[in-house]
Length: 103
Image (cartoon, helix red, strand yellow):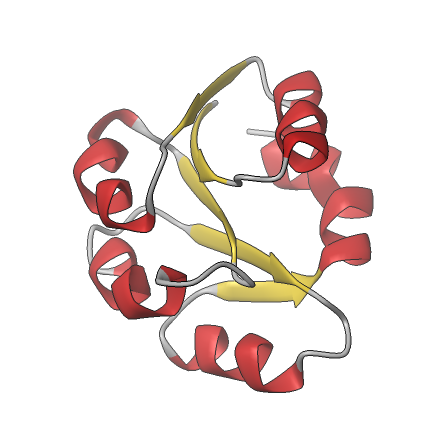
């Protein structure tokens, strides 16, 4: 499964790289929409500046988008969901990662 991810935190990146055999990391949110052409899944850290601004464009590509944020950040999780992203608290996202990455 090809994954495109915007996750600047090194711990998050290492967890994603360990779980996904084919992950491409982008360095800024604006690069997400252009990078999804070969992806089966897009993963984003919703807590990062600029992610919500580009989320609708990424979702419009038709590739499923899953995002994670702090469990106490209801407004970000709700905003991402309203833009078509499957948004979940960070801890649940990483616990669910094997399931999310299964074909």
